[in-house]
Length: 138
Image 1 (cartoon, rainbow, N blue to C red):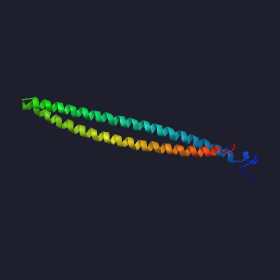
Image 2: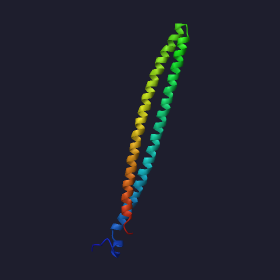
Image 3: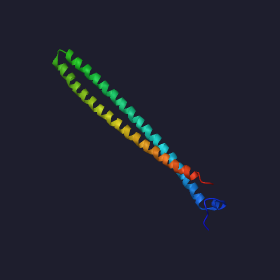
Image 4: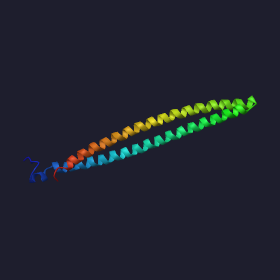
């Protein structure tokens, strides 16, 4: 005999227990997706912090380069000035590399935030299905 969706026969239907399992699974999936999104956002925040620190380090490297250059100009002995001038070139190159690293970290943070938004969308989708399944009579 087929059971209708309304009436007393529905409670004994095999559909109800399976709907409860689906609802529970969707609820767990929603929680897992939200946790994933939270962890990815944390990872993105760390990448942003690393990018900021790398930029600060590049600025410090440039400041050291300026100081070395000034020191090289003040030296009358070329034997002491030449190594300073060479170090300036190395420090400026290192600062450029650090700027590139910071840009890569910023790009990684942007990608991670996109992944977090995707995980949140999965959670909303799973949560929506769970609420629909939960709206059926017990």
